Image (tube, rainbow, N blue to C red; front, side):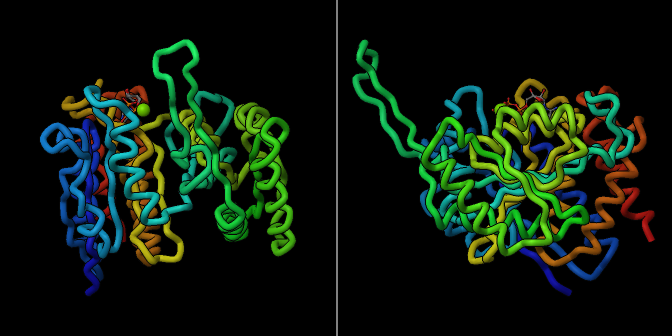
Length: 357
Ligand code: ATP
Ligand code: MG
């Protein structure tokens, strides 16, 4: 029997609640199928850790998780700590050095869930957003001088490298090719940003030559937001830079019914470093401790983790269990307009796993 070592970093707020639910589901899956197990190590890094130690994670934190098979992340964000500290101190401090350059975000309207685009039924919205996760607008390059003075200047420089752009575009074409519709939309703002974005488009054209079976087009990010709302059925795989895809993913999550459902995988496709799986939502302190956080985003992230670990059958079964549960409004949490609690949804998914043959 294979035992997968998982580094769990619940983080702050509802991160701890959804990761606890996720670990219950992992154990139920392992028990049900008996062909693999999980050894989960918990790391209490995040905002509370920062308040005690002055850093979001220990100096040798990355070394501690370097050899795990996968990382399961909750959310790091804290009302008493500026967001750029929580983000750069933990999530990006793992993603960037572990070269998790492909951030993959599936979006689908699950059974039983209503999109704010009321006319849209599930199959008409089935996307995967691929976010460049290692450079671009979040390269961290820039500066701020003359703080507080009238001549104050601040810059954030977007860095795009040929190697970085080429690998994410290639990854997106491969992913598009693996999906039934073989459709890719390449997003930029190459009309206004005339260096990096134009290079991005040029590289897309070059890479596309190797994928004659994939139908692809280019979109400007502003027009893209309209197309996502007005013609969602014309989209399938979408690739964009760090900032653009960050924004488009929140729109996608809302169109699919709730931020609480959306999963994400931060992949190091070469598998030199562990990949990281997490719900896309944040720490949501407004609902912390109330037991009403929607755990579906975490469960769907576990589906992606199982696929990455090489357990496609268990992944498929977990996805089926999730869809059985979302189909029943009795198991909708308040973000979906229901009354269910995190524990109800978790118990229902576990029951569906146990009932599966
Ligand atoms: P962070 O600072 O960590 O990004 P946040 O306070 O910005 O956290 P988000 O998690 O990004 O909050 O979510 C915004 C809102 O969406 C929350 O205030 C919350 O009400 C709702 N929400 C987010 N995730 C969930 C979830 N899993 N279940 C239910 N509601 C959620
Ligand atoms: Mg937020």
